[in-house]
Image (cartoon, rainbow, N blue to C red):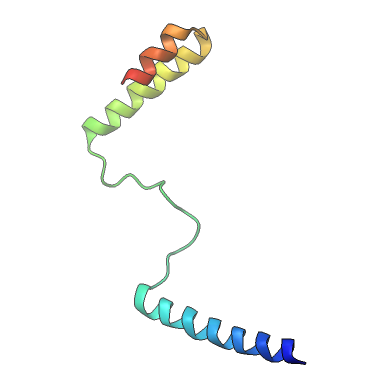
Length: 73
C-alpha cells in the first residue's frame, strides 16, 4: 500500500515537472536531429563533399597512408 502511494506521488510530481519544462522550453517536432544544415555555407558544403570522397577512396584502397591523409584534415 505504501508503495502505491509513493508511486502516485512520483507520477504527480513527474507530471508537474514535465508540464513546467514544456511551458518553459517548448517542444521539438520530433526525432529529426542534426540533419539540418541551414548554417552551412557553400564553402563548408564543398569541404564536406571533398572529405567524403577522400574517405571513400581510402576505404576502397584500404591503405594506412590513405587513412592517415583523411585523418590529418
